Length: 216
Image 1 (spheres, rainbow, N blue to C red):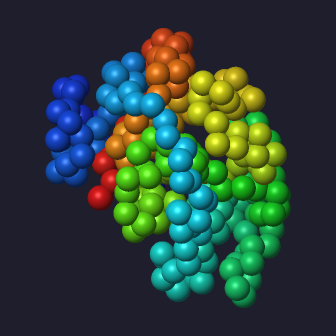
Image 2 (spheres, rainbow, N blue to C red):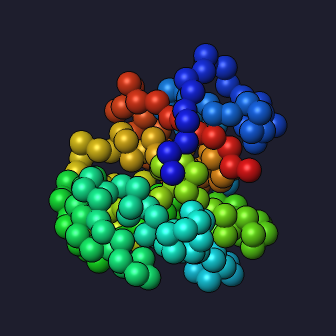
C-alpha cells in the first residue's frame, strides 16, 4: 500500500495542477501545504456513515481480505498468520497515536486519517458514491488509513486537529502532515478554525514536509 514518493523542487501548484496526476506527487514544507487548503464552512447535513461504502474485499486478489485487514497486514511489525476467512492470528503492531504495542488484531482499529464525517463536511458530500467508496478504501498511499489502538481511534472519533491531537505529543508533526496530505490528496477543504490549528502546528514543525499525490 506504499506509494512511490518523489521530492520535487518547490513550486506551488495551480489549482488545476493540484488535481492533475501528471504533476504528482508533490512534497512541500508543511507551512506551504497548509496554505494550499481551501477554507470553507463545514456542512454535516445529510451525512450517514453508509454514504461511504467501506472495508471492501478483494482489492488485493487472492488473499480473501478486506480493506481493514489489508491495512493490518501492511502495518504489522511482526506479521500475523492469515487463517481461512482472513482471520488474523498473532502479529504485533505499533499504535503511533498513543505509543502502544498491540498483539491482537481485535485491539486495533483502522482509522481514516480524515474521518468519513469530516470528509463529508469538507466536500465529499458533493462526490459520487463511487468516489466516496474509493476514499473509504484508499490503499494507494500510507497516510489515508492507519492501524492504531481502538481506544485512541475512538477518542479521536470525527474530530479535526483543532479538536483532537494524538496523546503522544511527539507525533503531532507527523499527524498534522498526514492530515494535510490526505485533505490535499482528495481536494478537501478546511474550516477556518481547523486551518488556524494547522497553521499553529506548522509553526511548531518547521522541518516537517507534506507529500501528497492527487487521487484519481
